Image 1: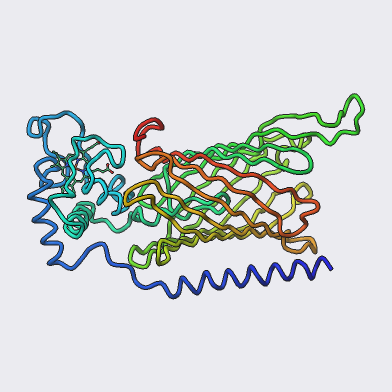
Image 2 (image 1 turned 180 degrees about the horizontal axis):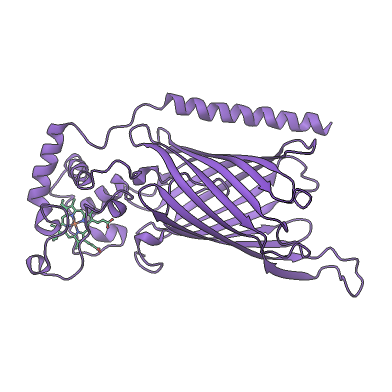
Length: 387
Ligand code: HEC
């Protein structure tokens, strides 16, 4: 009976997965960033006329005595800075002026003087200042789902919260710190901590309804984006993570053994502002008496909506999470996580996501969870800048 119920879920999910892959196969080639040489020649001419007085003919920023203000100008030749900004954001800044993305008014608006097409050509020309294709472009930095890990290497700090809304109470917090190094790599540190309601007998030593707090198992990881293609909108990366048993297993925080977690992640831009992301990997504990070996896979499909032409981004996402213990006969466990991500400030580097994790299998013993994160793309500025 349970088996039949679960197998039906698996069919639905396998079908959705196939549709996702099909959409990927059908994606038309997006326009190349580097337009035809002639178009880029026009971009260069326009840049030299409209932008170089401040940004410099070489893209590094004209000297202070020349521009007459001391606000530092961006260095467009610095790939680490310039590769991560999507074209659309730069076109928005050039069209509307700096304040549209929480930058200074010293960056003027060109929307009245230059057409969208001209600004796109200029931005394409600015792209050539970096000229190193190893750096994955910012377009491939898709909105972060609540569970599926992104393929894009990021400089981010994320605070996430999971609250069990039925059964025994549990509140899990996580602080994730991500730091890029080189063109394609990222280091990652995860610190979980939380509170759990104890399932006591009601006696004095183990009272029911008593909450205990503690640190969970800290994780360290390294990610590398092995492949990306700006034209097809595809990015693929692999991550190796070590989860160290820093948590108190007795109290229910942590597994009590070191766990290795290798996984791959994949991101794909789809037509009409849709995007698809997936992640698959293993949890391999050193001591299998303490924790079971597990395979897991996750995928998410979403779409970004923009308020007005340059405003806030809203990304509703539907995520499916699957996991299966490797030793036991246990069948696959599935969850579905509807959620919505929203950018909070003008700069769009502070975002929040809220969703619900609903168990599709074993819902009698596994709890529904309310999930939330607050994300700070710290490379783009301080937490309080750009509002
Ligand atoms: C009058 C000087 C001036 C001119 C002319 C100018 N800019 Fe700027 N621009 C700035 C300043 C100053 C900043 C930095 C703003 C800040 O950091 O708050 C800036 C920042 C930018 C950024 C920054 C984006 C980021 O993500 O940090 C882009 C893109 C940009 N300018 C594009 C252009 C383009 C395209 C043109 C020509 C069409 C242009 N600018 C012309 C002064 C200028």
